[in-house]
Image (cartoon, rainbow, N blue to C red):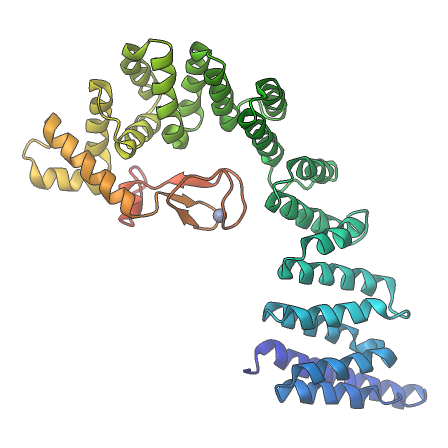
Length: 394
Ligand SMILES: [Zn+2]
């Protein structure tokens, strides 16, 4: 065990506390402290000499007679937890809570610290119990609500997660403003899987009430419409999504193809895509990228979009220019190029979180890394090559 800066801070803190205790005794004429400093110094010695269990014992003896060392107990507990020595952290915090003389503010702090130990140890039921106590009010109310929300998300207990987020919204701290809508989408997915389409639609109505234009809600409503043999409604719902959220083109395209096929309107795909692409280069490029990655280039409309895309996408355009004199690949060359791009993309992560940088081969509504909602975006060939996307080059 190396002596880390935290341990160094503990030692320095100990020296200050020791000086303060001695100084106070000398200045005030109070009776000298009854040995806490010896227990305390023993604890520090054990810590430095790599005997953490004996250090804990010594510190726990010290806290029985000297409240000045409480802060050090917290630092020690946090240090153990950070090092993954959760059993020791739990012991430190449990012993603090067991002290009858502990001030209420310290008791609250120790309860929250113990909840963090339980979370780290994966003992979610124990953590939940403490966090529910803390969420009723006090200094750790918001922190406890956020931790509870993480527990319920992890356990996929969406009803409880909704209740916690409503509570957070009431006190004005919704860190993830779309979380409640996503929870209802999760419940709608479950209802849909169970074949309860009425319940799924009920949840999706709540999603709309939460957020008028919520892309995931529209996609799910389209899924339910397809399940219920209402393909025309599905087409209507899907058409709106890429314009609002171009990054979801990969989610829209296969559903749109399916819905048009179910409605016997396959021939409309070209005109719908052209209309969507007319809404802006972002949308056109997102649809083309999605089509290339899914290998869906079997219509002239999609080939035209892909041709425009490979001409504009910096990392690809360079290759095209190097190989073709007039910079415009014919259908056969374009198809081969798109197949190569697809293979290249399949070898790497295809999505990346804009918040924490987590990358994944499949799409997630919630980032598995930082647990933020709606932060995963598809990676373009320029992203993969480490270049800024078109329009952002300097
Ligand atoms: Zn993330």
